[in-house]
Length: 218
Image 1 (cartoon, rainbow, N blue to C red):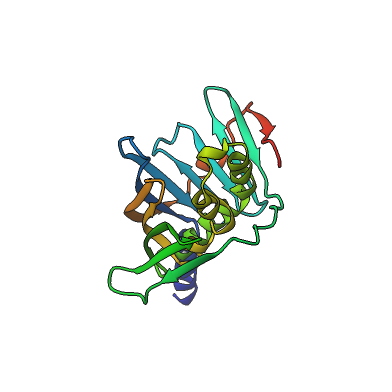
Image 2: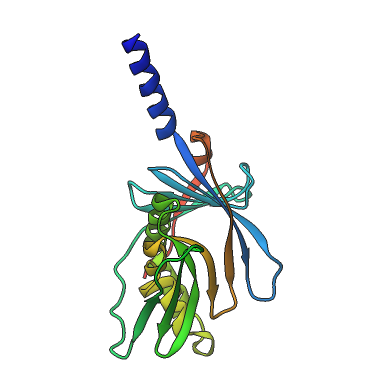
C-alpha cells in the first residue's frame, strides 16, 4: 500500500512538472483594433502566438538563450541571439517607481528623462516563472530592438522606445507578471486569463524542413 501511494505521488509530481502556463492577453497598437496574444511557458521554452496552434509563432529557447520567429508561409525561421548593447548616453535618466502591492497587484511607472514611458500593474506571485521567461525574451531581443531604433529616421526616434525595448526592458517583468501595460506610444496590453494545461511538445518544435536565417546583428 505504501509503494502504491508513493507511485501515485510520483505520478502526480510528474504531471505537474509537465504542465505549461497559458497566458491570454489582449493587445492593441495605436490606431489598430485589439488583437489576442497567447503565451505558453514551460521550464525550457516560451511560445508567443495569436492562439492558433498551426499559425506563426515566436519561440524562446530558455536553455540556449535564442529566439526563433517562425513564419509558415515562407517556410523559414529567423533566429535572434543576444548581443552586447552600446552604452547608454551620459544624459540618460530612468526611474522605475513602484507602489506597495495591493489587492489588484502592484502599480508601476517608468520615467525616462522626465517622460512617463510606460505604466501599469504587475503581480509578483502569479505565474512567476512566466514573468522570468518574458524578461529573458526581452533580453535576447534587446539588441535587435536597438538596431531597429538606430535605423529609424531621427524624427521618429523616441527615448521611450529605447526604454521599453532596450535598456529598461526587463525592469517590469522582473517586478512580476504584467497584468496591464500602457506605453507612451499608445500601445497597451491587458491579461485576460491565466491557466495551466498539459505540456504539448509539438508546440515548441520548429516545423520540419524549415530554413533558418540569422537575424542581422548590430
